[in-house]
Length: 400
Image (cartoon, rainbow, N blue to C red; front, side, top):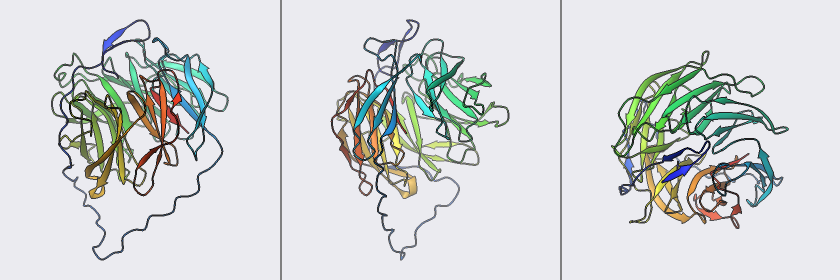
């Protein structure tokens, strides 16, 4: 969510969060999970970086989320195409009839797009990509849904209701359409953290091994781990992990190895490396680290990305308006801040890689732009790929 008060669907307003604490220090490792690390023998030759395959040249689709109920917002899901070699974006229109589509996700088979409707009467909408036909919407059972993801099985949609502090599950049928909600769980414990009036679920994702689903709640300073019954679509809580009070966790991203993850703390302006136990679903949150933001700058870290090879991680800094680059060390257990680069926009709400990992897209909410960066496969360095693309209140970019 954003800092400050905003008005969205139905005329409702909310205080997204208050304040930000100073960022903490640099390189922190987390306790390793029980499974032993596999180390490269000391006398083994260092791996040689492979030459990346030639980038495809045909334009690829790009979908852009926005708010339709704010001044200057969009009128639906932004439609665009991007050049996978250069990153240049060309607008192709708008898919109307979808209210406040602030976050987007695609089905694993690539055939269906799912969108939150971030309104008081929260919903999720399915869109068939072949002809961009809207397949219908379902209620999330809460207010202000701000995140959704598809379970790797392709059978369940997971969504997070920010304002209500709850998470929902919907079945996905063979056509990609959504069925009636199968579960809704409100985060009633622990009590809200400092400055918060209630729970605020901000993300709902599946662990890389598929064994658990995890919900990040900014209001309760907690990451909840659940078992998802793959036959019934119901949730059973199995663990809780707590940040420091007032950290306001927002977004969790797993290392591809599956034993570690990285957490962005929106209110505290910190990040943390976390250990993950696949057997129990329990997350172990490490000590707070710096976001790389300029001292004295009010900054709200938004989202992490990790490269497919697990070598580098990137963080979107809203307020500082930068992208921080981290080296990922100790097979995922440790983050080391390398540098930051300007995002060339205002308030980068969300970041995403192109499917081949060559490009990074940053959605800049306040400037209404999408910035595109090339990603150096060897060094992880980011370079701006041309002028940012103008799009009304850009809050999510999904390159396919």
